[in-house]
Image: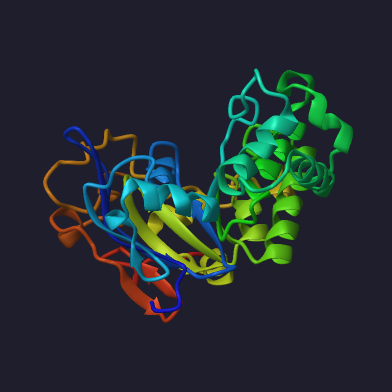
Length: 319
């Protein structure tokens, strides 16, 4: 799409003979918040790192404002890093324990805005600390002196101090207490709204994704299986796996028992990803038959804002 900030087309990532991602295609507009959900091992973090070119792509395209990112030489990629930042899952492990947090937050300024004086850097660091809910005097402390929630605020400050055009959040609240989780999510929402940063938010927490994101991608075993606007996905998911994810969310009205049992046919072992081509979800799907067993389903349009990769989506009703 011509106005997209980021376009991913048929992306493939391999580790040796193992295919971690295959045929991944989507786009992200400037200022948009896009959620990415799926179970552990489905390829969420791999996708995030491939987009940032922290790991190599084995095939497909990555386009940034229409430019081929995979063709950028190392010098150009380094220059563009200021527009693409990431927040990691473990807040303490992502900070250098030997640096004061002020030095950590100032590092992007030293790299990309080298003409700033030391005084100007300190001023920007202090302003950013206060913007994320910390005090300026905390710049002189070390990471181990902070709680997990405070460390994640520091990570947000470091990622956002250059006001990047794209921020990737790789499960940034999964290790935090529920009360702190909401604060960090609201902080990200405020910063995105204020600075117009595009957001790719990876999470297991569907409630957080529903609150923060306007569109949602669902990934399973390295393939995107559903893409939809948030309200459409939560109201009427079309893929059996998406339905299982939503059904597994505890329902307080029923004593935290899932409102709908996931459509899983027994506990059959799954084939390796490089097995003969078929629907990746077939062994866990109560609806699998016919082409599900022999053909990989392509993404099909349910409506202009909703795509699903399922041979039998017209017959699968969510209630």
